[in-house]
Image (cartoon, rainbow, N blue to C red; front, side, top):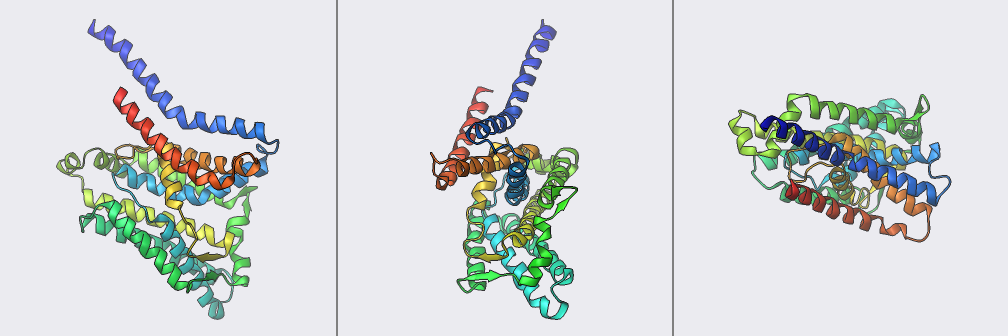
Length: 334
């Protein structure tokens, strides 16, 4: 009887888990059907490519946020850090143009500097969380204000603009294609694939999940909790730098309003994708789907007229609340 009961219960649990995992994909499919009904051009290759390319900024950042949230942390500074990093890239490239010219020498150094600045910003957050023993919410809320103030100071309250000649060199990194696929999509896909492997197939990913599930048990299991957690914040900062590297060639400028509320979109994408807000379980591919869902919502609001596109952020906020409520109800029923 015990064996028979086990055989009947386990398949049911597997079905329930699979249906939960399919939730983001079902939502994505329904949104695509809705968009196709509202506009004939919604499913065109051009529109779909534009949606994914625009989602690449938030998508890359949200992938980093998936690691941080899975470990039981959170980073509210990613938007202001992106703005600061983009501003620094512009300043560095502009300062190098007179000596190196507007070619890939100056642009390449600016890109490497942007990645380094992002990683250092993430490391600063991580050190304050691990060595300073300060709650991640407080640390990153404070650094949010610091980075936003720094970009405002650097721009002197105005806007930093990339050198026009350097912009011509730099722009293909966003507007260019490789085998007819936009470069941002290729970079986004590459980051997602590497991150999925790291989360699912490496010791690092397993340690992140263990720390998020129960930090004390992870410490008793000889996991270097502080080191792993610091690495998640550094990874988040590095991916923020990568997003800024892609942002600069598209807009060619940075100011105090750059990347406002990107942290809201990144967290929303992570939660929509099925990552547990309290930590312990992360789903990279779900985050990718979540980012595209958010971009689809914005695109649908822009293509039709019966709901204002200015309500996009209201939809994102509501989605976060609903997703967390669904996670709690799922835990209650199980």
